[in-house]
Length: 274
Image 1 (tube, helix red, strand yellow):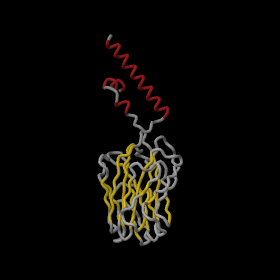
Image 2 (cartoon, one colour):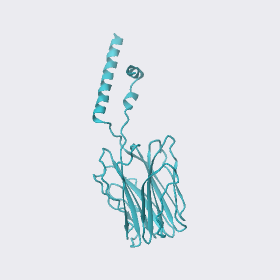
Image 3 (cartoon, rainbow, N blue to C red):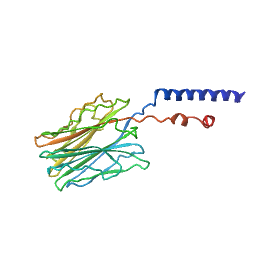
Image 4 (cartoon, rainbow, N blue to C red):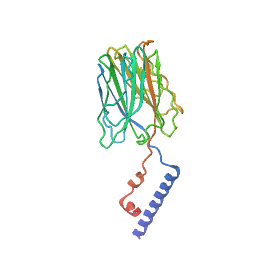
C-alpha cells in the first residue's frame, strides 16, 4: 500500500514535469536577468600599454566589455587592439582634431578558466595618454551577446560624447551600454556626468600627458526601443580644439537552461525518466 501511494506520487510529479517541459517548448525559453558584476579602470602616459585587473568574482560565461582611448595630436588613425587574446572588436573610432581621440571597444565571453586581467595596446607616442575601463556582466547570451550591431559616432569642436541611438530587437531584459571618450588638454582629473539611466555604477578614467584623454562607460537596465542616450558631459571647460567618439551596445539576455528542472528532481524520479 505504501508502495502504491509512493508510485502515485511519483507518477503525479512526472506528469507535472512533462507538462512544464511541454509548456517551455511551446512558449520558448525564458530569459535570465542580466546582472552587473563589476568594473575596472587604469591608464598610462607616454603611449604605454594599459593592463586592467578584472573585478573579483568574474567567472565562466561572464561578458567583459573593454573601452579604451588614446589622446594624441599626430593625426594618426590607430588600429586599436587588445593585447589579451580572444576579444571581439565592435568599435574602432578616430576623430581628427587639434586634440585627436581614438576609441576602441571590445568584448569577450569568459571561458572555463576566466581571465584575471585585460591588456590594451597603447600605440601612441611619448606625448599620448592611454585610458581604459571595463565592465563585466552576467547572464548575457554567450553565443550572440550583441543583440544588434553596435552603433558609433564622432564629432569635432566639443569633448562631450553623445552616444548614438540603437534600435535593438527589444528582447525581454535587454540592457544597453554606452562608451565614450574625449581628447583634450585638461589633465587627468576630469570626469563625466552620465545621462539619465546610465548613472548607477558608471565609470570613467582620465590621464594627463602632453595630449590628454578621458574614457567612460555606463549601462541602462530598462532602455527605450529604440534607445537614444543623452550626452556624457565632461567636467572640464570645452574647446573647439577638442573632439569625441562614442558607441552604444545592446546586450542580449541569456536563455535560461532547460536542465534546471531535471537537476531539481530526486534520484528516484530521474531514474524513472531514464
